[in-house]
Image (cartoon, rainbow, N blue to C red; front, side, top):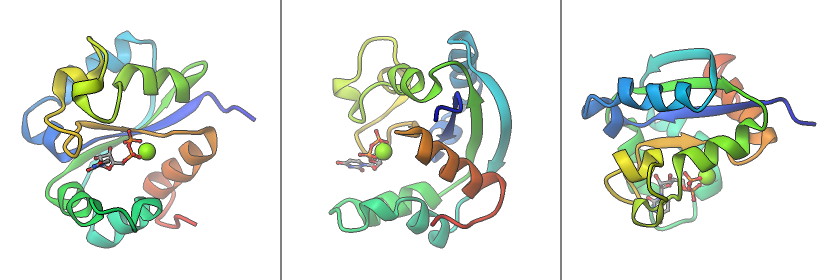
Amino acid sequence: MTTNRTFTMLKPDSVEKGNIGAILEKINAAGFRIVAMKLTQMTQRDARAFYDIHKERPFFGELVTYMTRGPIVAAILEKENAVEDFRALIGATNPEEAAEGTIRKLYATSIGENAVHGSDSDENAAIEGAFHFAGREMF
Ligand code: UDP
Ligand code: MG
């Protein structure tokens, strides 16, 4: 089932660099409606739970440090085909491989500090949105 919703985080580097407004402009211009949004800061426990799927990866420790070092903007977005269209809008994980005009091409620093999160499936969009807006239960 498709819900036409996805979940995003403007990651700490985006907030630090003052890019919240510019990124939200891109999101709105691409036709996404903001359903829920908040400025928040993830704890170590939150970040470890959120990125549990990556816990065996060599970058996991750095990822948790990065995602917890300052505030993020968490949001639920709505649009037809939201998950796929938002992944296209943000571009590849590595900004060097991201297409021109994508959010990561414009605003990411590196494969690690890549400005934004976008859910990779309808199922994960629902889980991740609930994690930030309905409690902290990830699984
Ligand atoms: N990441 C990293 N090094 C890598 C791959 C990923 O630091 O080699 C970080 C990066 O912040 C990325 C996050 O881990 O956004 C989650 O990785 P994933 O492969 O799920 O990429 P995404 O879905 O965010 O494009
Ligand atoms: Mg991912």
